[in-house]
Length: 161
Image (cartoon, rainbow, N blue to C red; front, top):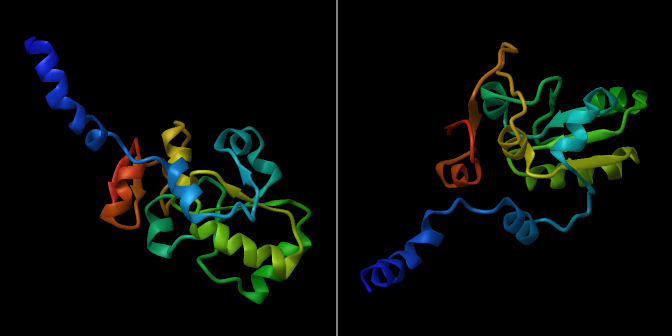
């Protein structure tokens, strides 16, 4: 009887204590206008892609995917010209994949290149156990979460905001 009472009292807190789901977040905010690529797919063949970080500079400086190029949230013509000369398909990412979808749409329209959105962004990359690096190229556990509200979507690493 005491065990049943304890379970009944704890049930409302179980959902409260669970981390938020990136899947649900992306279903809510994204239209899938830019096809997703999984962190596992990208990790298996990182050299085959131009990897673009669409977050703010301070987020990129805390940590980013190895080999990623910071582009911010704007597509500049000089950068687009150099990207057009590359035969590599593009992968865009942000914290979880929302801002990068917006950037990917603009990039695909302007360049006609194949663009993929990293599903779950840097959070999913880190949570899969893959290496991230800081502004000096050194391995780090820190992940900029944009704001305190977003850190609930990161399961591993040290949140910074």
